[in-house]
Each structure stands twice: as structure tokens, then as C-alpha cells.
Length: 340
Image (cartoon, rainbow, N blue to C red; front, side):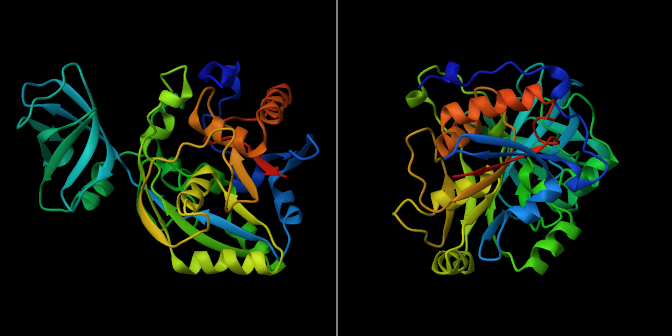
């Protein structure tokens, strides 16, 4: 298949610019790919759609305030987006400026902080941050929530809590695992009370998740890297779900990428590292039986992933239905439940 096969026309007003007042007030499109059936529900119905034998696998990554604003010593404005933290004071970053800063040049940040350019790593800049606080402490003080490029506004106080899942724990993401944003404490408590099991993986979502596929031939696409970790307790939880006949339901495409990356030997194993797994139609899923996800950008790798999971024609039909029914799209938008 080609990149252009994954294009769809989305009216701009359907791109959610802000979260709904309540996390779980979203709508839920349900797609049964085996029957090619679509139904319209609300996210609160998710509790009734899962069984006590099922296992929900969440991504517990935590979004860091990864966007910084500053200026060069010569006065030119600079915008920095942390892509990956390398230690207490270094990071790989994207830099937006009228002219790319040279190695050893200084960038002055807010509140007296500054950083130095150590070098380049392809499109990324290797920076060293200097001050009396660690990089994470500095980001907490002067960093901004890195809202996706299709959200056409500056971040505000609301985003500090709402562009973060209620179960976020492991700092390192520069984009939220958005399927998890629909879960409130009350929904999690209701699922637990029903006896539904849960487990966690970590995948630090990078800004590459928003990067367009630039080649028409998908076999030529170079997938971005993201750090993931699957722990032994999660492997055991998956084995127990299988033993009792329950489904493994991934909460978000990032949970899918973590689970499937840890299953490349043929079965799920504990492990961690960088994943470049690019899932397209024809891929055989090894550890995931159902998927809760948001709606994804046209021609994106995530749209290709859900097409691999539920079938290309099913997904394109479901997206057209969502547009006709005025669903809200992308990070702060509505959800889909994909089952077989």
C-alpha cells in the first residue's frame, strides 16, 4: 500500500482544540472488524464493554513540559522542544530558529537559565543545560506543555492536568498517550469494582508521532525511535489473562507498540530499549486482542497501525462515519474501540 491510500479529508472544525469539561464525557465509536459493524456509544459505556476476565494495558508515561523559549546571544528568537532527556543536564532537542545555532553557541532561556549547543544528531540538537537545578526541575519551572501542532493555541493551566493521564508516572514523554486521557479516577474505580484487571507498560511518546510520512512507498519510511519498557509483572498479567480466557486490551497505540515490540521473539518477554517497530497491514499481532484509541492524522503511521489491526477498509469506513457523525478528532478528541 502507498502513503496516499491513507489520506482522508477532515473538516478543520472537527479537530478538538480543548478537552471536554469532563475526561470521560467523550463519545466512543465501536468497530467490530470481524462483522464490519460500527456503533456509536459514549465513553462511559466502555465499562459495560469489557469483562472481568479482560486485562487493560495502560501506558504510564508522563508528559514533561518540554517546550522552551529563549534567544541566541545575538538576539534571535529560539524555540526548543525536548525530544529525549539524556541525563540530569543534557537532552536531544528540536530547535526552531531563523538560522540553526552552531556548535558551542549559547541560548539564553527564561529566568536566568541557559544552554549550550554541543552538536547535532541528524535533525536533533544535542544541548547541555546549565543552572542550579536539574533539567527536569528547570522544565517544571519554565517549560511549557508541548501541545500538538494541530492545536492552534498556546498552552494554558488547563493543559497541565488535562494533557496528562491520571495514572501518569514515568517522566519522559513529549506527547500524551491520548487514549488514556479519557479515563477518570471514577472510571478506573468502576472498572476495578467490576473485577477488570489492569497492567502498565511505559513508552515515552516522542514528537515523531506527529511527523508526516514523507515517502509514497511505505517500505522506504524510516520509523522514529521511542523508548519502551515492559516489566515482568505485566508479562505475568498477560499470561494470566490468556489462561482465564480474557482479552488483552491495549489502551492506545503506544501500549500496542510497547507490547508488540516486546513480542518480536514470538511471545511477550520483559525488556526495555528503543523501538522502531512500524506496523502496517499484513502485520501479525502477537499480544493484543482489542484496542482503545483516538482518531489519527491522515497518512500517519498510527492510522496505518489501526488499519493493520482492524483492516484497511473497516478503518476508512469508520473514519468516514466519524466525520459524518461529527466526532471530535485527535489528542483532545473522541475515542474508538476496535475489536475482532
